[in-house]
Image 1: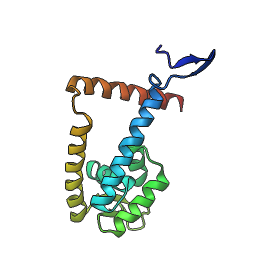
Image 2: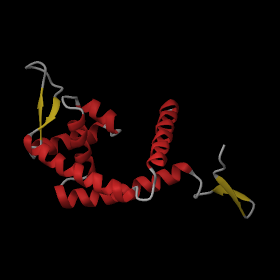
Image 3: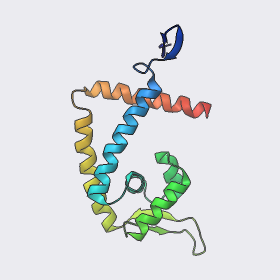
Image 4: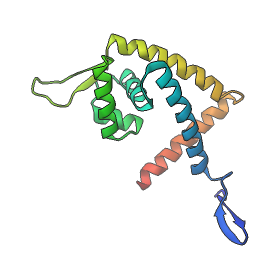
Amino acid sequence: MMKITALRNDVEVIDYEHYTQHLATVFHNRIMALSSNEYLTIFGVGTVEIRVLAAIASHPLHKAADIGALISIDKGAVSRAITKLESAGSIRGSTDKPEGKQKRWELTEQGWQIHSQFINVVKRRHERVTDGIEESELDAFNKTLHKLISNVDKIS
């Protein structure tokens, strides 16, 4: 197992250069800050709303709980994002039955326009973030991330 601690003055402390959870958190925080600024400037919505919109584009006619599970966001945040996106005319909901309460969501024409712009922003940022990294390295990294996620799911 990789060593994640070091000795400082005879005391065991976290070695932040090798502590995977720390590095993943730093990457997440930095990319989310960058993304948030871009999304607010370009689309007028935050990262949660744009992630929900993208999830609905990728998985249309899913319920809010399914969307939350897909993008690993709690139901309350998904519900608030859906309310904002629906009010803005970017998504619409439908139910299987007239009295049904759990809506299934899909993008409107306006939502698809936003999504098209979003995809371009994401692809450009992905190119910049992964500059100098070989596709095989990214593939191995993604496989490792999937293993880490699976391990976390097993202990939670």
